[in-house]
Amino acid sequence: MLLGALVDAGVPVETLQHAVDAIGVEPVRLRVREVTRAGVAATKVDVECADAAHSRDWRAIRGLLESAGLDDAVRATALSAFERLATAEAKVHRTTPDDVHFHEVGALDAIADVVGVAAGFAALGLDTVHASPVTLGSGTVRGAHGALPVPAPAVLELLSAAGAPVVGGPAPYEMCTPTGAALLATTVSVWGALPALRVTATGYGAGGRDPAELPNVLRLVVGETTSTPEGSAGGAGGALVIEANVDDLDPRVWPSVLGHLLRAGASDAWLTPILMKKGRPAHTLSVLVGDAAAEAVRRVVFTHTSTIGVREIRFAKRALARDVATVDVDGEPIRVKLATLDGAVVNAQPEYEDVASAADRLGRPVRVVLAAAVAAAHSAGLAG
Image (cartoon, rainbow, N blue to C red; front, top):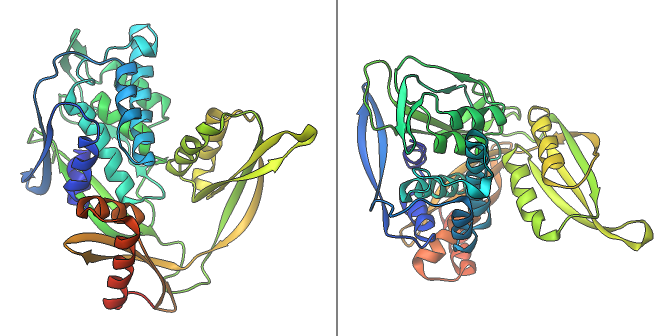
Protein backbone atom coordinates (compact mmCIF):
# COMPACT_ATOMS: atom_id res chain seq x y z
CA MET A 1 0.00 0.00 0.00
CA LEU A 2 2.90 2.37 0.71
CA LEU A 3 4.45 1.53 -2.66
CA GLY A 4 1.14 2.22 -4.39
CA ALA A 5 0.65 5.53 -2.58
CA LEU A 6 4.16 6.66 -3.54
CA VAL A 7 3.65 5.82 -7.22
CA ASP A 8 0.18 7.42 -7.18
CA ALA A 9 1.71 10.58 -5.69
CA GLY A 10 4.12 10.87 -8.62
CA VAL A 11 7.22 8.83 -7.75
CA PRO A 12 8.22 6.95 -10.93
CA VAL A 13 7.98 3.20 -10.44
CA GLU A 14 11.37 3.00 -12.19
CA THR A 15 12.90 4.77 -9.17
CA LEU A 16 11.57 2.05 -6.87
CA GLN A 17 12.52 -0.75 -9.28
CA HIS A 18 16.08 0.55 -9.59
CA ALA A 19 16.53 0.37 -5.82
CA VAL A 20 15.02 -3.12 -5.64
CA ASP A 21 17.30 -4.33 -8.44
CA ALA A 22 20.33 -3.03 -6.53
CA ILE A 23 19.80 -5.65 -3.81
CA GLY A 24 21.05 -8.32 -6.19
CA VAL A 25 18.76 -11.17 -5.14
CA GLU A 26 16.54 -13.28 -7.39
CA PRO A 27 14.54 -11.28 -9.99
CA VAL A 28 11.82 -9.12 -8.43
CA ARG A 29 9.46 -7.02 -10.56
CA LEU A 30 7.10 -4.26 -9.49
CA ARG A 31 3.86 -4.26 -11.51
CA VAL A 32 1.55 -1.24 -11.37
CA ARG A 33 -2.19 -1.33 -12.00
CA GLU A 34 -5.15 0.93 -11.35
CA VAL A 35 -7.93 -0.39 -9.10
CA THR A 36 -10.83 0.91 -7.01
CA ARG A 37 -11.50 0.24 -3.37
CA ALA A 38 -15.05 1.07 -2.19
CA GLY A 39 -15.31 3.47 -5.12
CA VAL A 40 -11.95 5.20 -4.47
CA ALA A 41 -9.48 5.05 -7.37
CA ALA A 42 -6.06 3.87 -6.22
CA THR A 43 -2.78 2.42 -7.45
CA LYS A 44 -1.89 -1.19 -6.67
CA VAL A 45 1.75 -2.24 -6.83
CA ASP A 46 2.24 -6.00 -7.00
CA VAL A 47 5.63 -7.48 -6.13
CA GLU A 48 6.25 -10.40 -8.47
CA CYS A 49 8.96 -12.87 -7.51
CA ALA A 50 9.58 -16.53 -6.88
CA ASP A 51 8.88 -17.95 -3.44
CA ALA A 52 11.87 -17.51 -1.17
CA ALA A 53 13.81 -20.75 -0.90
CA HIS A 54 14.66 -20.11 2.76
CA SER A 55 14.12 -17.64 5.54
CA ARG A 56 16.71 -14.91 6.09
CA ASP A 57 18.02 -13.73 9.43
CA TRP A 58 18.84 -10.14 10.33
CA ARG A 59 22.55 -10.72 9.73
CA ALA A 60 21.91 -11.91 6.16
CA ILE A 61 19.54 -9.06 5.33
CA ARG A 62 21.95 -6.53 6.81
CA GLY A 63 24.70 -7.90 4.59
CA LEU A 64 22.50 -7.60 1.50
CA LEU A 65 21.64 -3.99 2.26
CA GLU A 66 25.15 -2.93 3.21
CA SER A 67 26.66 -4.35 0.02
CA ALA A 68 23.91 -3.13 -2.35
CA GLY A 69 24.47 -0.15 -4.64
CA LEU A 70 21.91 2.05 -2.87
CA ASP A 71 21.90 5.76 -2.09
CA ASP A 72 22.94 6.39 1.51
CA ALA A 73 19.52 7.70 2.53
CA VAL A 74 17.76 4.66 1.05
CA ARG A 75 20.18 2.26 2.69
CA ALA A 76 19.83 3.98 6.08
CA THR A 77 16.02 3.81 5.99
CA ALA A 78 15.97 0.16 4.93
CA LEU A 79 18.54 -0.84 7.55
CA SER A 80 16.61 1.01 10.25
CA ALA A 81 13.32 -0.65 9.28
CA PHE A 82 14.80 -4.15 9.37
CA GLU A 83 16.69 -3.41 12.58
CA ARG A 84 13.41 -2.39 14.21
CA LEU A 85 11.81 -5.58 12.90
CA ALA A 86 14.63 -7.72 14.28
CA THR A 87 14.43 -6.02 17.67
CA ALA A 88 10.65 -6.43 17.85
CA GLU A 89 10.72 -10.08 16.76
CA ALA A 90 13.54 -10.81 19.21
CA LYS A 91 11.48 -9.41 22.07
CA VAL A 92 8.41 -11.41 21.02
CA HIS A 93 10.36 -14.68 20.75
CA ARG A 94 12.71 -13.99 23.71
CA THR A 95 15.88 -14.21 21.65
CA THR A 96 18.51 -11.84 20.23
CA PRO A 97 18.06 -9.75 17.05
CA ASP A 98 20.88 -11.57 15.20
CA ASP A 99 19.18 -14.89 15.88
CA VAL A 100 15.82 -13.80 14.46
CA HIS A 101 14.74 -15.62 11.29
CA PHE A 102 12.20 -13.39 9.61
CA HIS A 103 10.37 -16.05 7.56
CA GLU A 104 7.70 -13.94 5.78
CA VAL A 105 9.60 -10.71 6.45
CA GLY A 106 12.75 -12.25 5.01
CA ALA A 107 10.97 -13.20 1.80
CA LEU A 108 11.88 -11.40 -1.39
CA ASP A 109 8.63 -9.45 -1.61
CA ALA A 110 9.10 -7.98 1.87
CA ILE A 111 12.69 -6.94 1.09
CA ALA A 112 11.35 -5.27 -2.06
CA ASP A 113 8.65 -3.53 -0.02
CA VAL A 114 11.14 -2.06 2.45
CA VAL A 115 13.75 -1.00 -0.11
CA GLY A 116 11.14 0.32 -2.56
CA VAL A 117 9.42 2.43 0.10
CA ALA A 118 12.78 3.74 1.32
CA ALA A 119 13.62 4.80 -2.24
CA GLY A 120 10.20 6.41 -2.68
CA PHE A 121 10.49 8.54 0.44
CA ALA A 122 14.02 9.57 -0.55
CA ALA A 123 12.76 10.58 -4.01
CA LEU A 124 10.08 12.81 -2.50
CA GLY A 125 12.70 14.59 -0.39
CA LEU A 126 10.31 15.12 2.53
CA ASP A 127 11.43 17.22 5.48
CA THR A 128 8.88 15.74 7.91
CA VAL A 129 6.48 12.80 7.80
CA HIS A 130 3.24 12.99 9.82
CA ALA A 131 0.88 10.05 10.32
CA SER A 132 -2.57 9.67 11.83
CA PRO A 133 -3.35 6.80 14.27
CA VAL A 134 -2.60 3.39 12.77
CA THR A 135 -5.58 1.09 12.16
CA LEU A 136 -4.61 -2.45 13.22
CA GLY A 137 -7.66 -4.66 12.62
CA SER A 138 -8.68 -7.70 14.64
CA GLY A 139 -9.11 -11.47 14.44
CA THR A 140 -6.25 -13.85 13.63
CA VAL A 141 -3.62 -14.28 10.95
CA ARG A 142 -1.57 -17.35 10.05
CA GLY A 143 2.20 -16.96 10.16
CA ALA A 144 5.19 -19.27 10.01
CA HIS A 145 4.60 -20.35 13.63
CA GLY A 146 0.84 -20.88 13.25
CA ALA A 147 -2.16 -18.70 14.07
CA LEU A 148 -1.42 -15.31 15.64
CA PRO A 149 -3.79 -12.76 17.15
CA VAL A 150 -4.34 -9.51 15.26
CA PRO A 151 -2.66 -7.14 15.79
CA ALA A 152 0.37 -9.38 15.58
CA PRO A 153 2.72 -9.18 18.60
CA ALA A 154 5.54 -7.71 16.48
CA VAL A 155 3.21 -4.95 15.22
CA LEU A 156 2.40 -3.90 18.78
CA GLU A 157 6.08 -3.96 19.76
CA LEU A 158 7.08 -1.83 16.77
CA LEU A 159 4.39 0.80 17.18
CA SER A 160 4.76 0.90 20.95
CA ALA A 161 8.50 1.58 20.63
CA ALA A 162 7.73 4.36 18.13
CA GLY A 163 5.14 5.97 20.41
CA ALA A 164 2.50 5.62 17.70
CA PRO A 165 -1.22 5.98 18.47
CA VAL A 166 -3.27 2.99 17.31
CA VAL A 167 -6.93 1.96 16.88
CA GLY A 168 -8.52 -1.41 16.28
CA GLY A 169 -10.62 -0.45 13.28
CA PRO A 170 -13.88 -1.75 11.84
CA ALA A 171 -12.69 -4.80 9.88
CA PRO A 172 -11.99 -8.27 11.37
CA TYR A 173 -8.67 -8.93 9.64
CA GLU A 174 -5.04 -7.75 9.67
CA MET A 175 -4.87 -4.10 8.62
CA CYS A 176 -1.23 -3.42 9.53
CA THR A 177 1.56 -5.94 8.95
CA PRO A 178 4.90 -6.02 10.78
CA THR A 179 6.63 -4.76 7.62
CA GLY A 180 4.22 -1.83 7.35
CA ALA A 181 4.57 -1.06 11.05
CA ALA A 182 8.38 -1.06 10.77
CA LEU A 183 8.28 1.33 7.81
CA LEU A 184 5.93 3.69 9.63
CA ALA A 185 8.05 3.55 12.79
CA THR A 186 11.15 4.36 10.73
CA THR A 187 9.82 7.17 8.55
CA VAL A 188 7.18 8.98 10.64
CA SER A 189 8.41 12.03 12.55
CA VAL A 190 5.14 13.25 14.09
CA TRP A 191 2.02 11.28 15.02
CA GLY A 192 -1.26 13.18 14.89
CA ALA A 193 -3.67 15.06 12.67
CA LEU A 194 -2.84 16.43 9.23
CA PRO A 195 -0.88 19.68 9.77
CA ALA A 196 -1.64 22.97 8.04
CA LEU A 197 -0.14 22.78 4.57
CA ARG A 198 -0.62 23.64 0.92
CA VAL A 199 -1.21 20.32 -0.86
CA THR A 200 1.02 19.64 -3.88
CA ALA A 201 0.27 15.94 -4.48
CA THR A 202 -1.83 13.08 -3.17
CA GLY A 203 -1.50 9.35 -3.64
CA TYR A 204 -3.77 6.41 -2.84
CA GLY A 205 -2.18 2.97 -2.43
CA ALA A 206 -4.51 -0.02 -2.56
CA GLY A 207 -4.48 -3.12 -0.41
CA GLY A 208 -5.35 -6.54 -1.79
CA ARG A 209 -8.82 -6.75 -0.22
CA ASP A 210 -11.87 -4.72 -1.20
CA PRO A 211 -14.01 -4.91 1.96
CA ALA A 212 -17.43 -3.37 2.47
CA GLU A 213 -16.48 -1.70 5.75
CA LEU A 214 -14.16 0.98 4.33
CA PRO A 215 -11.94 1.88 1.34
CA ASN A 216 -8.88 -0.33 1.80
CA VAL A 217 -6.38 2.35 0.80
CA LEU A 218 -3.48 4.22 2.32
CA ARG A 219 -3.46 7.93 1.50
CA LEU A 220 -0.27 9.95 1.14
CA VAL A 221 -0.61 13.76 1.17
CA VAL A 222 2.41 15.82 0.09
CA GLY A 223 2.55 19.55 0.66
CA GLU A 224 4.36 22.63 1.85
CA THR A 225 3.73 23.97 5.35
CA THR A 226 1.74 27.20 5.42
CA SER A 227 3.48 28.90 8.34
CA THR A 228 5.19 31.24 5.86
CA PRO A 229 2.88 33.60 3.92
CA GLU A 230 3.11 32.74 0.24
CA GLY A 231 5.31 35.00 -1.84
CA SER A 232 6.77 36.83 1.15
CA ALA A 233 10.15 36.80 2.80
CA GLY A 234 8.70 38.07 6.01
CA GLY A 235 7.15 34.87 7.31
CA ALA A 236 8.78 34.05 10.62
CA GLY A 237 8.58 31.04 12.87
CA GLY A 238 10.26 29.80 16.00
CA ALA A 239 13.08 27.28 15.69
CA LEU A 240 15.62 25.62 17.92
CA VAL A 241 19.24 24.81 17.27
CA ILE A 242 20.13 21.76 19.34
CA GLU A 243 23.88 21.19 19.70
CA ALA A 244 26.28 18.75 21.29
CA ASN A 245 30.07 18.35 21.25
CA VAL A 246 31.00 14.72 20.57
CA ASP A 247 34.57 13.38 20.76
CA ASP A 248 34.13 9.63 21.20
CA LEU A 249 31.94 8.48 18.30
CA ASP A 250 33.24 6.46 15.34
CA PRO A 251 33.16 8.97 12.44
CA ARG A 252 31.66 6.34 10.14
CA VAL A 253 28.44 6.55 12.14
CA TRP A 254 27.80 10.23 11.41
CA PRO A 255 26.01 9.83 8.02
CA SER A 256 23.51 7.51 9.68
CA VAL A 257 23.00 9.95 12.56
CA LEU A 258 22.32 12.84 10.19
CA GLY A 259 19.87 10.71 8.22
CA HIS A 260 17.94 9.75 11.35
CA LEU A 261 17.77 13.39 12.46
CA LEU A 262 16.30 14.52 9.14
CA ARG A 263 13.73 11.71 9.21
CA ALA A 264 12.84 12.68 12.79
CA GLY A 265 11.76 16.10 11.56
CA ALA A 266 14.91 18.24 11.62
CA SER A 267 14.95 21.03 9.04
CA ASP A 268 18.73 20.66 8.75
CA ALA A 269 21.60 18.91 10.52
CA TRP A 270 25.34 19.43 10.14
CA LEU A 271 28.76 18.77 11.69
CA THR A 272 31.57 21.22 12.52
CA PRO A 273 35.08 19.86 13.25
CA ILE A 274 36.43 21.24 16.53
CA LEU A 275 39.43 20.75 18.85
CA MET A 276 38.54 20.08 22.48
CA LYS A 277 40.61 20.14 25.67
CA LYS A 278 43.80 18.09 25.74
CA GLY A 279 43.93 18.36 21.94
CA ARG A 280 41.12 15.87 21.32
CA PRO A 281 39.55 16.15 17.84
CA ALA A 282 35.77 16.21 17.94
CA HIS A 283 32.64 17.40 16.15
CA THR A 284 29.88 19.80 17.08
CA LEU A 285 26.56 18.34 15.99
CA SER A 286 24.02 21.07 15.18
CA VAL A 287 20.37 20.42 14.43
CA LEU A 288 17.80 23.00 13.29
CA VAL A 289 14.29 21.90 14.26
CA GLY A 290 10.83 23.29 14.93
CA ASP A 291 9.12 22.84 18.27
CA ALA A 292 6.82 20.06 16.99
CA ALA A 293 9.70 17.70 16.22
CA ALA A 294 12.15 18.85 18.90
CA GLU A 295 11.52 15.96 21.28
CA ALA A 296 11.90 13.37 18.51
CA VAL A 297 15.21 15.00 17.50
CA ARG A 298 16.49 15.00 21.08
CA ARG A 299 15.70 11.30 21.29
CA VAL A 300 17.73 10.61 18.12
CA VAL A 301 20.69 12.60 19.44
CA PHE A 302 20.71 10.69 22.73
CA THR A 303 20.15 7.24 21.24
CA HIS A 304 22.33 7.45 18.11
CA THR A 305 25.33 9.39 19.48
CA SER A 306 27.45 9.08 22.61
CA THR A 307 26.56 12.47 24.07
CA ILE A 308 24.84 12.70 27.45
CA GLY A 309 23.71 16.31 27.15
CA VAL A 310 22.67 18.97 24.64
CA ARG A 311 22.39 22.75 24.59
CA GLU A 312 19.55 24.57 22.91
CA ILE A 313 19.34 28.04 21.38
CA ARG A 314 16.09 29.56 20.16
CA PHE A 315 16.12 31.47 16.88
CA ALA A 316 13.64 33.30 14.69
CA LYS A 317 13.48 31.68 11.26
CA ARG A 318 12.42 33.32 7.99
CA ALA A 319 11.91 31.42 4.77
CA LEU A 320 10.77 32.06 1.23
CA ALA A 321 7.60 30.48 -0.09
CA ARG A 322 8.37 27.28 -1.98
CA ASP A 323 6.85 25.32 -4.83
CA VAL A 324 7.77 22.32 -6.96
CA ALA A 325 7.69 22.05 -10.74
CA THR A 326 8.84 19.29 -13.12
CA VAL A 327 11.07 19.56 -16.18
CA ASP A 328 11.92 16.97 -18.81
CA VAL A 329 15.47 15.91 -19.72
CA ASP A 330 15.38 13.48 -22.66
CA GLY A 331 12.22 11.84 -21.39
CA GLU A 332 13.25 11.74 -17.73
CA PRO A 333 11.10 13.82 -15.32
CA ILE A 334 13.11 15.89 -12.84
CA ARG A 335 11.52 17.91 -10.06
CA VAL A 336 12.72 21.48 -9.51
CA LYS A 337 12.31 23.25 -6.17
CA LEU A 338 11.27 26.89 -6.60
CA ALA A 339 11.65 29.68 -4.03
CA THR A 340 9.60 32.86 -4.59
CA LEU A 341 9.81 36.41 -3.29
CA ASP A 342 6.84 38.72 -3.86
CA GLY A 343 5.49 36.29 -6.43
CA ALA A 344 8.72 36.06 -8.44
CA VAL A 345 11.02 33.03 -8.57
CA VAL A 346 14.41 33.90 -7.09
CA ASN A 347 15.87 30.38 -6.85
CA ALA A 348 15.32 27.17 -8.80
CA GLN A 349 17.18 24.00 -7.89
CA PRO A 350 16.73 20.57 -9.51
CA GLU A 351 16.14 17.74 -7.03
CA TYR A 352 19.47 15.93 -6.80
CA GLU A 353 17.98 12.44 -6.30
CA ASP A 354 15.92 12.88 -9.49
CA VAL A 355 19.01 14.07 -11.35
CA ALA A 356 21.11 11.15 -10.13
CA SER A 357 18.42 8.62 -11.04
CA ALA A 358 17.96 10.17 -14.49
CA ALA A 359 21.73 10.19 -15.06
CA ASP A 360 21.90 6.50 -14.20
CA ARG A 361 19.07 5.61 -16.58
CA LEU A 362 20.46 7.79 -19.38
CA GLY A 363 24.02 6.59 -18.88
CA ARG A 364 25.39 10.11 -18.49
CA PRO A 365 27.43 11.92 -15.84
CA VAL A 366 25.39 13.54 -13.09
CA ARG A 367 26.93 16.96 -13.82
CA VAL A 368 25.72 16.80 -17.41
CA VAL A 369 22.15 15.93 -16.46
CA LEU A 370 22.19 18.58 -13.72
CA ALA A 371 23.21 21.24 -16.23
CA ALA A 372 20.50 20.07 -18.63
CA ALA A 373 17.87 20.25 -15.85
CA VAL A 374 18.93 23.81 -14.97
CA ALA A 375 18.77 24.78 -18.64
CA ALA A 376 15.30 23.19 -18.96
CA ALA A 377 14.11 25.17 -15.96
CA HIS A 378 15.33 28.40 -17.58
CA SER A 379 13.72 27.47 -20.91
CA ALA A 380 10.42 26.81 -19.14
CA GLY A 381 10.54 30.19 -17.47
CA LEU A 382 10.83 28.65 -14.00
CA ALA A 383 14.15 30.25 -13.05
CA GLY A 384 14.46 33.95 -12.34
